[in-house]
Image 1 (tube, rainbow, N blue to C red):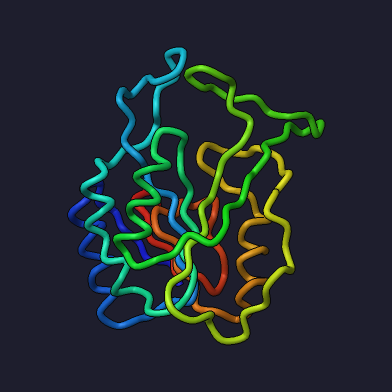
Image 2 (cartoon, rainbow, N blue to C red):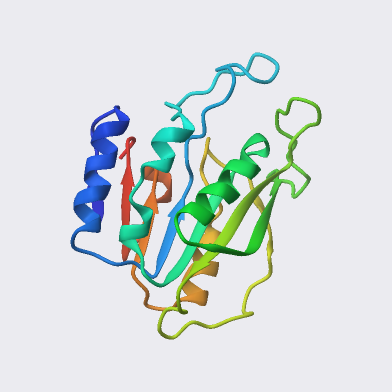
Length: 194
């Protein structure tokens, strides 16, 4: 199921998630928050091509209502690690792991991106757990490192979805802040750009 959110204001996105929280519980929540940076051109003049949200708007997401038991996978940028850990705790999660995506070119070389001090060639996804394991949870099937080609802007690796589906087979999956290029069957996806 895909949820269309044509709005560009955080309040509309929040209302969609709140309505969903009233009726559904998920085994896995995947979030790629559009973290607000200090500037829209943070590194070497490269503009950010999507709407960013202040931390307070991300904090207001009703994540605790969407899940009693299960996993939260949350992508984080370098200057938001402390905030991401704070949010996990506030929402009732215990940090249990993280996944590193080493970005590669089509020639399987490291794909270096823009960074403030160093060129970034990786992204990190934090993993939190709340309550009990979802039914049929299968531990230790996947590595915590993904080597995968960098694709479109903010497009995450296919391997992450495969990893989640292997950890919690036939689960109820929700992606928040999803994009068209990451839509998957059997997932509920919410995002401004759908």
